[in-house]
Length: 241
Image (cartoon, rainbow, N blue to C red; front, side, top):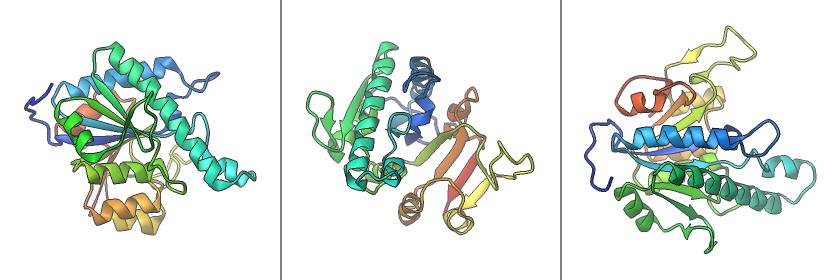
């Protein structure tokens, strides 16, 4: 895939996945779900878009939840970062099983597991057509994987962040509970902050606003959703300056 030309509107993206996207009913990681995600990523890689992935760890451990129950916040956040590494390895395994070349890059040194994140090396992997999975968050406590996605997208000069969710975009209220909730097709960063819409946390939104990094929120479960967005179709919610 190195040097492959693409007709896609977005040449390089960061795909933000929650840990819950991998979660099973009885196990912390549902291998069927990781394989399904891997297949979708292979589909979009075929059009030539370079893919970086930031994945959460909430299916295994949530640092904020643990700290609210009395655990030291810094310790809890480091445990959450380790959970993202486990998810990254699971996703890497299934991507490589179906023939997609990958690299796991960690925010802190874990030589036996992946490469230490170095911006120039990450960009080179992307240019060679490898899917780069960014694990370990930012490497610092008190920052979410939303912020990691905003940071890595800005660092590698991505064209957009694609946030995969279980719903069709950003709503005025929880669409699972309120059938009258309104789906927003277009939002500014200020709209998101003022309305306290749960797109990403405020730190991540502010970082995207400062770096003019668009965010597209969509339902990954819909067949072809990400591919169609990359080709320029209007799907989900577009967050911009």
